[in-house]
Length: 84
Image (cartoon, rainbow, N blue to C red; front, side, top):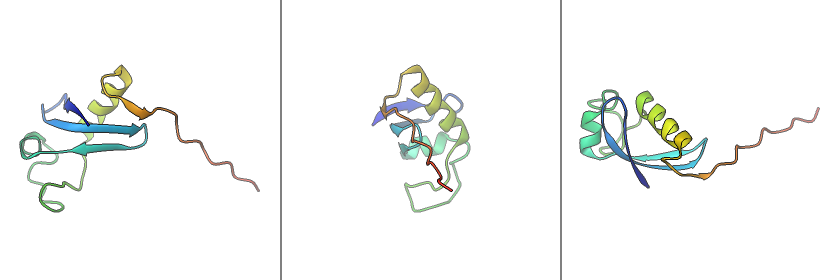
């Protein structure tokens, strides 16, 4: 996992970008407290917020596009072909 700081609130999380479609994010108490969307949400079990953060998602995508975060499998998921 790679460290990443949210461009909006400054929360520092660990990120693993497995593909363009799949991202794992590891939050700690400090990051959850800084995030405007996650802090105080009360969702999920302790230490595992259920909802995401739009600003963090944008920060992750931009970091991946710049090459700051490694995308482990950069090939897009193929679109299924439907045969009539």
